[in-house]
Amino acid sequence: MARDWRRSFPELGNIPNYGNVNNPTTYITDILIQIPYLEMGAIGIPSQTTARYIKMAYNNAKQNCCDHVDIYVVAHSQGAAILNQALPLLTDDEKKALRIMTIGGEQFVREDSTHFGFVGNYDGNGDIVPELSPRNWFYNEINIPVQAHPNINYRNYFMQNGLPPGFIAP
Image 1 (tube, helix red, strand yellow):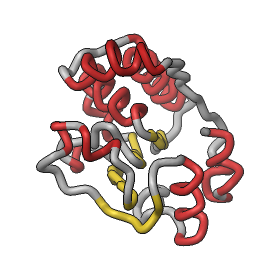
Image 2 (cartoon, rainbow, N blue to C red):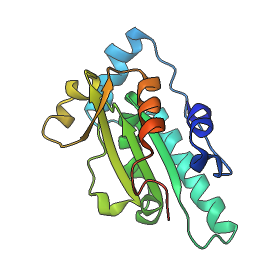
Image 3 (tube, rainbow, N blue to C red):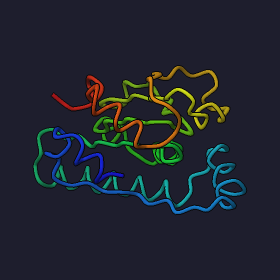
Image 4 (tube, rainbow, N blue to C red):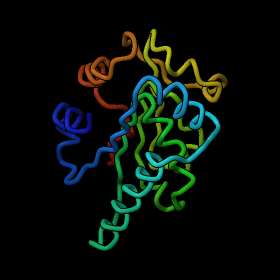
């Protein structure tokens, strides 16, 4: 997914390094193990891996004397829940460098948006995944007119309408 998004948006193509946290699941592991643990707030291996990648990116930028650090995160579906559980493992400075966009998130990033460089939670028409989590029930997300769940629909929407204002650092 990361490579597809970089190719689709020229403004992301200028980002020199990118990573991808692979979360291989099956229907059984998803329903019986991973989703209940994520909903309880458990920090599993995918969340630990996500936090480790973010920390590595932040530390590499600081070691290379970057004056300003921006770390872009696009999290889709269960990836948003994994990211949400990774956030407590990060320092305030690391969080401030994050520019987060969740799309069809199993869990929206609920932490105060002033803790981040940018945070936007996007939900499409007919995408039931965000509606299933009790953690999302009383949280306002940004509804966009895409149909259903597939990642490709979200990507196409943002290709036609542009990335959210504020997502790309000035």
